[in-house]
Length: 97
Image (tube, rainbow, N blue to C red):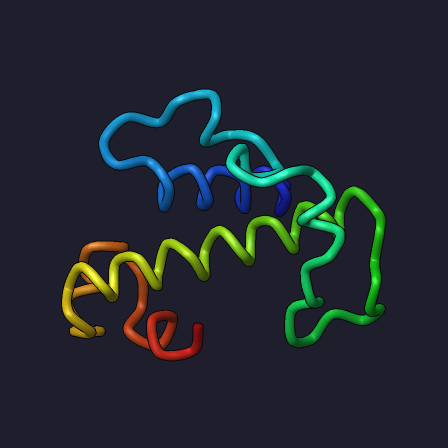
């Protein structure tokens, strides 16, 4: 259930207006599948170098979220409150990524 929630959250962050099938993939379409394996583990991960499907999905979702937040922060010229509003998330999410 958590993995599905993460995939949907990622799709919402990546889609500009309409969610398309490419937004629902576990590994980002614009990067090769091995890129998710090379990602650094997210803070709090129990095992570095987790090559399980769950670990790869979590790394991909974390990276997609980080890139989406970065993109929105650039669009709002660093205004974290506005970025949080546009992303429909908490202000703290925009400050921690």
